[in-house]
Length: 199
Image (cartoon, rainbow, N blue to C red; front, side, top):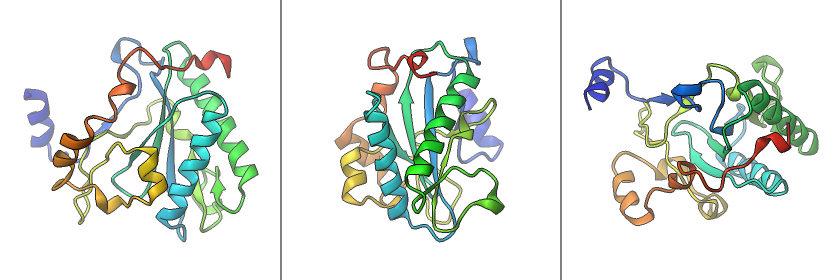
């Protein structure tokens, strides 16, 4: 609690997390994709892209878990067995992102340079798997006029048309009482992917 209060005292609203434990920071516990709309892309396109990513991972027998970013997009996480180093996780994520961009050129881009991204697409950002990068933590409030929260969601909710504004500081605590912690499966040892099979 003292550490949390210290962060609050520094004026920190949203909190970003590392994706490896501190005892071996070079070996991630997750691979993930940051789905970020390029100007001109709607959140409906972000949801469509998330489902494309889910299906591509399912074809590899990989479970995936979505959450809102609390900002403009969706994060898709894959729990992995600790083993591959950060560079290997990044290499896997890059290969899949490039494959999806080639298969869905009117929907998806994997172009990291902002000036070269085609408008109206959704960036499947694999570079967030690179060393030192972080993503907004689950249940992190975002410093925005609308007090949205980065919230774990179900694939059913993605399919049904959930909106970013559905998840705000005023309703997420009550939501948790109904849904439980949808992120709990990512914290255990079971159900993790051996990414070595793919890198």
